[in-house]
Amino acid sequence: MTARILNGKAVAAALRAQLAAQVAVLPYRPGLAVVLVGEEAASAVYVRNKDRAAREAGFAAQTIRLSAAVTQGELLATIAALNTDPAVDGILVQLPLPPHLTPRAVLEAVDPAKDVDGFHPVNAGRLQEGTALLAPCTPRGVMKLLEQAGVSLSGARAVVLGRSAIVGKPVAAMLLAANATVTIAHSRTRDLAAECRRADVLVAAVGQPELVRGDWVAEGATVIDVGINRLADGRLVGDCATAECAARAGAITPVPGGVGPMTIACLLENTLLAAQARRGVA
Ligand code: NAP
Image (cartoon, rainbow, N blue to C red; front, top):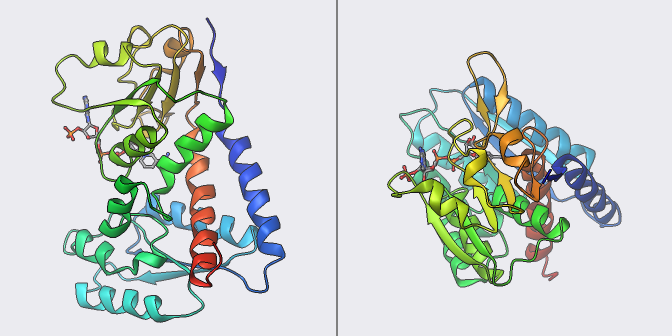
């Protein structure tokens, strides 16, 4: 079997265009504030891309750049000001933060109603309950790709590789809410390959280049590769050995051009949702 390639770039572009059309007819511009601490190169690129995508879709985007030496107190004061700024609907603090700062305290300082990353414990709890308005963007992107691909989740066996708070756990909660039977595997899982082979839907989010080999994939399975790993030779690869896996999978996401572009599109969607909810629009 040769897998169908799930083109996240195209799905994300369509979602961004749809959001731009919705924003164009609003009597206000949804506001997104991105806080960037320090000058880490990868973070700077991510923030620039978020800012550009937001502006292109008609959002009022602002990037607040703080020195790498900012104190925890100064950062918390910046977030407090954004929490009360009526023009700001969504707040995102770009991670990772410099080591002298405490990310947990920073994320918990964001007003849950403006938490467009979906990382605040209130929103994480609501996701488990099935009542979250704002849920993490990358997992939302995974679910949208599955939906767009017409993958039937009810009763399907889903295996999530990785249990991080930003990808593995929330995507597992979303798959469960979609009535899949979900297994979460991680670094202590006894036989990773055997767990993966049972999956109708395999979501890999481990941050290990090409960990998932072709013979880990069941014939006809859907493989969603969240991983983004830069190799020493400069190549960008996922957590799955794409060519090997594609030889057995029914459908697979490429890296780059799969889940990656969905994350920013879902960030914009969350910002619009937050803006409408703050104005009492369901
Ligand atoms: P993370 O916080 O480092 O978590 C990795 C998870 O994978 C952990 O649960 C870890 O298990 C597990 N793991 C690591 N090595 C393993 C192994 N050899 N076997 C089995 N499990 C293993 O990573 P993350 O933030 O979730 O990100 C995962 C990947 O997705 C990264 O490549 C990241 O760059 C990418 N990512 C992409 C996007 C996007 O927009 N496309 C967004 C976020 C992340 P333990 O819990 O047991 O340690």
